[in-house]
Each structure stands twice: as structure tokens, then as C-alpha cells.
Image (cartoon, rainbow, N blue to C red; front, side, top):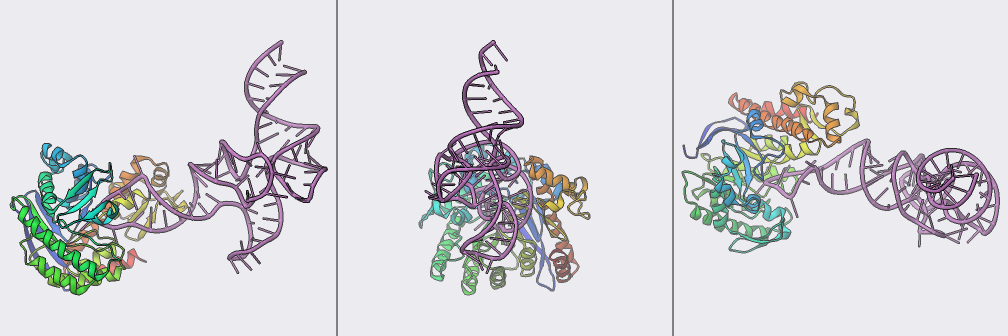
Amino acid sequence: MPFQFVLHKTDPSGARRGRITTNRGEIDTPCFMPVGTLGSVKSLSTDELKDLGAKIILGNTYHLMLRPGEEIVSEAGGLHRFMNWDRPILTDSGGFQVFSLARLVRLQEEGAEFRSHIDGSAHLLSPERAVEIQEALDSDIMMALDECPAADKPREYVEQSMALTTRWAKRCLEARRDAERNALFGIVQGGVFSDLRKRHAQELAALPFDGLAIGGLSVGEENAVMYDTVEATTPHLPTDRPRYLMGVGEPRDLLENIERGIDMFDCVIPTRCARTGRLYTRHGIVNIKNAANTRDFSPLDPDCTCPTCRNYSKAYLRHLFLSKELLAYRLLTLHNLHFFLDLMRQVREAIENDRFATFKREFLGDFEA
RNA sequence: GGAGGGAUUCCCGAGUGGUCAAAGGGGACGGGCUGUAAACCCGUUGCGGUAACGCUUCGAAGGUUCAAAUCCUUCUCCCUCCA
């Protein structure tokens, strides 16, 4: 079944409960999407991802274009076949790399001219090319190519950048070959300027995108500014299409933005932080490296049902981590992703019961105590 | 018995008269990570003090010198080679 979004209900707080249907399966929202930039959620097998309950993961156009190259993935039968994942995949367009690899990028009307961070070779990522690559990957949800300006850019820059993103968005829609096969989301920019956000949201809402994302946040601005900006944007997005806040975030960020009407999130935090020893539990953050865990033979979180907490102690995990044993990265990633995915399960349940605000307060009361 | 080489701050290891509380690794300790150039990055690591600065330290004990981890003497221990 081609892409579809059904909004089941909206909680009194503003939180939305919905369901996305794609050719490769359904995704209940609000949802969290683990990031698998290079066709792998680092350290995990796809079986482990399924067991965790991940319904959709991310891949990245820029990175897969450079290595192994989309033609290889296409030859393998698409990214799903290539990586042995049969559930939906959302692919980012490479727009974020315009920001994170800015030193290697020159922006033109035609597209983003990159020097590969791997070998220095030149590549032009145009809107058409970004769609072409994502189609070759056979992405379920493609993202339009956008420019993600840094947080410190002045209004004039952001306004022009936003206009470029709109022109690119239209070109992406033009370039898409099969709307039944590959959904396409537009990305709202506008920095932290409420009026620009409103304008851009309205511009993109008028276009036939399957969903709309909010980009250009969590790039260094204050948290409160991020929340305010989302709040200034979502009222101008169509209610019958999913809203995706890109690159966010910490547990509080997820809850604050769900309350502001966001349906989808992705973030590297659970996976990256797992690999740097920062673990999420309902009672807050545990830094597994800390000496206090040396002789602590209890699990990270006694109430957690993840495979790591069911079987291993903090002392052992700390030992694995300090020894740089590969098992550490896998076990800790399993735990963190379980935490994020489970948080979203609880959120969905709370919305169904019209008690999101209560859930949020109680959760943060424990988590940030 | 003879000839050489060596002992440095938790570990390895640089330093061969002042710019040395002593490079660089490692380890330890703490922190950071928000559409992943990330199994990564940053900071601290003799004692005291906010700091200026003071004190103690380079196997041990003496000595030379304005000044010693660096030079001299003796001692202790370790290594290599020859008998």
C-alpha cells in the first residue's frame, strides 16, 4: 500500500497519535527512528533492531552515494535487500551534510557541490540527483534536498537560504518518478525566526509532499528557542500529514515537541551516546565509565526489560567499555535504543488515554530528578 | 673475575648544567555528544594556594656549581658481553 497517514486522535495537550502506512509496513506515531547512516545502525544486526521494536530506520544519501555508491546498492536490489532490513527506511537527502561538512561544500543554485570527506573527489548533489540516489536506494520516505543553515546565520542569510530550499523542494517533486513507490517529504527551514518559519511552512504545505519535516533545529540554538520555533511552525502545517522534527533529540526534547504536534523523530543520541558510555535510564543518565560502577553488580536499570539489563551488570559493562571490547558498544546500543523506543511506546499509550501531560510530568520528574 | 650499559613523576619513556614539576604515549579520573567524517573529542593527573607563588621530586648518600634529572665520588640493584 502506498504511503498513507491517518491521524487517530489529538490529546488535550496537543500531542498526536497516528499511523503511517508504507509499502513495507506500518509505523505508529509518535515514533523514534534509529539512525543508520551508512546502511547500518552502528553495532546492531537487523534482527536485533527488529527485536527492539524498531519500525523504521534512517539511511543517508550523501554517505551511501560516496560509499559504496548507490549503483552498488541498486544492484543489490535496493538498500533493504542490501542490508537485510524489510521494514521502512527513511533516507536523509544530504542536506544535513551541507551543514555538518560545510567546509567541504560550495552551494550553488544548481545544488551542493561537495568535496568527498573520504577521498576529496568532487560531487554535485542537486535536488534531482538527491532524488535519483534515494530512488536507487529504494527509500520508502525520501527527503527533499535542503540547506540547513548554522544557528548563527543572520536573518537575511536564512531568508535567502529558505527560498533556495523551496526551489529545491519543487525540483525534487518534479524529479520524483514514482509517488506510489517512494514517498517524499519537504523540509521547512527558516532558522529561529517565527515569521520565516510560518511563511516557509505555508509554502511547503501548499506542495504535494507526503509529509513535512522541520529542519535546521538542534544545530546549536538554546533548547527553549528550539521549542518556541517548533511551536511557531506546527500550527501552519497540515494536520493530515505527518510532521517530522529532524535530528531531535534528548528525552525532554521528544516530549516537548510531541506536545507541540510532532509525529516523527530521529537522532543519533541513543546510538552515539551508547558508544561513548552515556546510558539512559528512567532515573536519569548513567555514565558507565564512572568509577562508582566498578563494583556495582546490579543492572543499569533494574526495571528495564532490554537484553542488556536482563543479563549484565554495570560492573561488567564498565569493564567491557574500558577494555574497548566490541560487545560493549552492542550491549549499550541495545539498551539506549530500547529506552528511546520504549519511551515512545509509553507516549503513544499515554496519548491514547488522554494523559500525555501527566505522563510527561511524571516521566521527567523521575528522569531529571 | 673482567668490560660495558642502565635506574626519571602510577606504567612505558624523552630529557645529558639554567627556558624542568620534567616532552610523548599508556593507564586512571572527570566531562561532552541532538537529520553520525564520532568504538569519537576535550580536560585533569606531585603537594598546598583563587592566584602570584611556595614546598617536595628524577635508585641512595655525599660533593662541585650562583644553579644539578643532567657533572664528580661511593654505595645498592638490574641488563649485556668476555672468562
